[in-house]
Amino acid sequence: MIEIRFHGRGGQGAVTSAEILAQAAIEEGEYATAFPSFGSERRGAPVLAFTRIDKEQIKLRTGIYQPDIVVVLDPTLIESHNVAEGLKKNGLVVINTKKPPEFWKEEIGVNRVCTVKATVIAMQELGVPITNIIMLGALLKAEPLVRPEMIEKRIRERFPHIAEKEVRAFDRAINESRVIQ
Amino acid sequence: MAHRTGIEVSLAIAEAARQAEVEVISAYPITPQTHIVERLAKMVADGDLEADFITVESEHTAMSAAVGASLAGARAFTATSSQGLALMDEIVYLASSLRTPVVMALANRSLSGPISIWNDHSDIMNVRDAGWISIFANNGQEAYDLTLMAYKIAEDHRVLLPVMISFDGFILTHMIEPVCVFDDEEIKGYLPPFNPPYKADPEHPVTFGPVGVPDIYTEAKKQQDFAIRSSISVIKEVFADFEKEFGRKYKPVESYMAEDADVILLSQGSVYETTEIAVDRLRKEGKKVGSAEVRLWRPFPFEDLRKAVANAKVVVVLDRAISFGGQPGPLLGEIRSALYPLEKKPGVIGVTAGLGGRDIMIQDYEKMFEYGYNYLKTGKEPEAVTIVGLRE
Image (cartoon, rainbow over all chains, first blue to last red; front, side):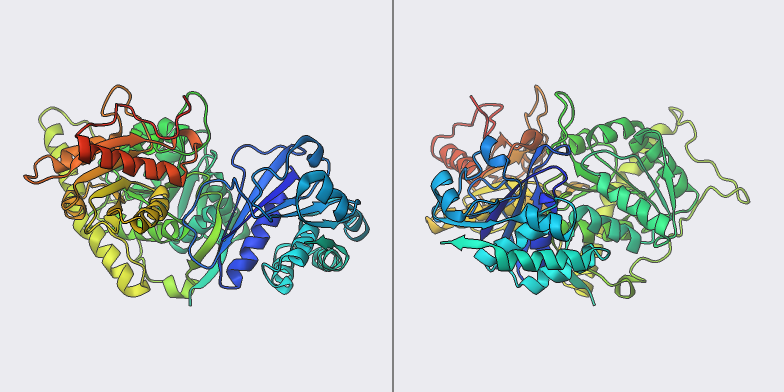
């Protein structure tokens, strides 16, 4: 079972990232669950969202405390939060940042890092700093959990009016993210 | 053909209500149930569901309108949680005594205070004796299937009682997971049109809800109890037919590796599936453990329960609510009293966990089994109230 934790701020779409990833995995025939950190929602406040993916039915319904992968949608969260908390040994951290992966490897103290200038791509392609789909592109570059076309399919179903822009931003993230393993 | 899709469980329940072709929805939003009625409101507004959505000023009215609609001959649906159900309470009892087959989706949430929007089973336990057929769904698929089956059970002329489907708030309501959703064509005709034997029809006036003077009240209550007790055969029939037609099996009491188990952990709701993980782990260590669930809460499945746990040495009952100053768990009290008449019966001990959204970890379940083994060895019961996962 792969467990993923998304860190974002209310309104950035972390919950949507978790959902779209799970739905793409389910469509590929796997089992997956996605859920937000349970509670009330506030724009701008730090939020967590979670995805589990497995070959078998997922009977575990607790929170995720020891993720295999952490995805950080908003780089300012790293200053106030230990985003790598509980991360498994050899776990992967995917970060929206202008800094190179080598910097974060040192800074956070993890071996596997993937970086992408997600806010830059979001402003250029979408005109708004919403990075959820872009972060999924970076995640898949570092860890091929589902086929990218499954995410693209979900984007087209969920955001029909801005699908082309979102797909372009997603593809750019796959091409432009940098991974050190 | 049914299609397997990743869907939020709340939306799957709304989809089941749409496919059940409900005619009246009356509901008031309350976390964590809100997504269900939000989606139904959208379906009605978009013209995808031909129904009246009655927006009300409180849950008390939500249930009143559902009962009224049902009396008028409409298939009625409502959904709520926690304080909402508590506010409905007066009319919850009327729905069953007026024999209105309303279906209610109940997203289980703790009761105040302190204020908590998170999951436990204190809301459902508060209406245990309200005369509703009450069934637990443990995952999204079950919540979807049981919402459809609920109408089949409720509207059967041998039953004519309201049905509530319980599913854990947030843990299920806010979960995206795979659910096999029927195509409309496939499920069309599963439910025959609602055709109550009596209805509030101005052309053919009848009286509902008259005063039950002392001369008649006792007999009315005896009839009501007879009706819900007898409904168990219809419930089993509906489960069996559903399995035959669609392949998914439901039982009043579910069990896992329980046949030869020395210690059985008995629970309700989504945690039941998770207990299976702990059972698998402990079985690998050679421990003969199993788990069971009282899925059908009312009418209580006495015979099914006795069969499921009769061979065990100890049953550890996991309660998700406290009966303050009492049993201490409502489920524990039921299990003890159901097994008491048996000549050869397992020991029954109780633990409480998962109150107000506290996670129950796999090691917590292992601890519960440990209490069982400890009891087996020493005959010593855990203290009342033993809360697993309590910070001390």
